[in-house]
Image (cartoon, rainbow, N blue to C red; front, top):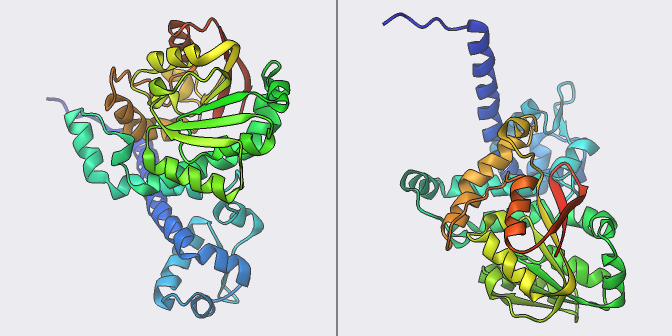
Length: 355
């Protein structure tokens, strides 16, 4: 067998990227520790300081802090002043690591990634056997992280741009109608609509009881009277004659998305509308690879979305990068004839779906 000659430039470029990714993997775990221990918030509140000063403020071990801060400074997550031997966090760094609820904050993504490391043995077993993995088998950080990822995106866009992009829907919601939020998770989207459209009645449904319990507590804290949460799958939702249905980043997780969409079609009134929010994706792998977020979406799809779908009946496995063409085919099979994209962000596409 002839010896394979390696292109040293390509080899060094790939090795360098992998080393960078490995460094990033360590950085993700340290960032999670910094978030959960309050280090980033303390550093922002204190201002420039030494590891010793920050240890006095936080009560954390100085030696651990020194290494943690050094690694973060090496990654550019925080700033180090060598002359003063002080660490600090710039407004831009704080926007990414501290400002909870802002779309710029990545701590939700980080928490969701860490959740997969926490259950890596299960992830390996699922991958090797090909079995499904229901949402309930994931670490609690997966549920919390997912809500922290999507909640700020909904806060930023749902009321201001997504709903206004739909034909006549905002006026209906303001006047008062029945809304169903399918696979609502912790209820961030449901609560937003209840707060902004007090004349409408909003029902949130999810198959994951612990998430519904969180949603109920959040609604109770917000003192909302026009909202209720129930534990049901999408195909089990009672027919209450809904005017408007929403599915946020969840249809691709369903085992039978055609059946779920058909049931939603059945429980909508004659002129009802479905708003489908799905991860941004093109219709081919080649196109998706041009999107820097595609590797992230495909990664979560491998670990979470496809296994979740395969754990349910049918187990279609659309995946988080299904694309509008494939989603449209699913919706057409469910009896919807009109599907158009009305808005988008760098992470999501918004589809208006009607009969």
